[in-house]
Length: 310
Image 1 (cartoon, rainbow, N blue to C red):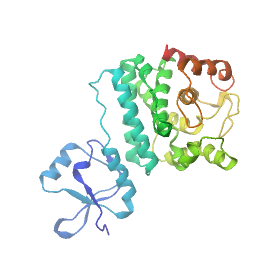
Image 2: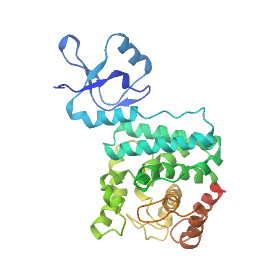
Image 3: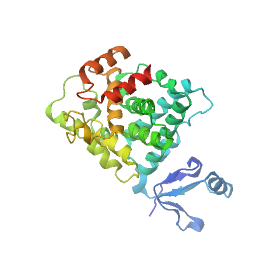
Image 4: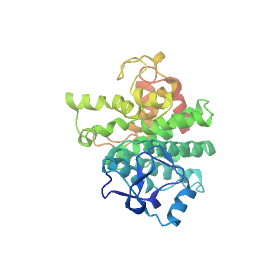
């Protein structure tokens, strides 16, 4: 049943959840040890290793989920002893690596929980030092934009929410999680379309516009909050009703989503892309103020961005 596929016990993260069956084979007979949804502790894995068990057997059909778990296990931990202005960029790099994992594999429950831990790290860092948001960024090669973009949107969205008076840590974590996962639907859009240097044709544009619905569908069973899921689904809505996928007016767009939309646009404008030069912070804010605020984006959320970057 399990074939030759194995899973090293030493790779199990303390407090993590495995979302695939794990078998042991005492006396050559396979026995289910942990079903999907099993939560691990360091004491248990230490005991298994001390008793001579080095690996579990897994069903070959779970190979994608196993691969995702092992990719996540190799990501570094957040170094909380770093000062916030240094830690925020370490978290950005970690979140970008996490996003790259999402694009290359199946979005599993383990991946979602890992993303929530990264979001918690963002919130803790910004609550310790709100000014650390001004350290985020740095020039990136345009082919890395896809991965770093979600990381920065999570940071900017959290910072804007804080300047607008959101101070509940759990609420901020839900917002940060939405920012981190907001573009997960792009994993099904070819990178050559995402990074195309010229205008998209009609077929390519429809593929690009599908990503909010695709992302929402991918995450619908993940147990994420309403705020997080709304950010994934509606971050391209515009307050004048010209956005997608549902053409919502401002009254139908949650404030958390309006905040994420501002963060999303700001990061796009200040990033180097295959088809555009990056704007400076001043140029981006000036463009948003005179071309987008009050028509496409919430003036309140825009003022929150300005306050966060002041």
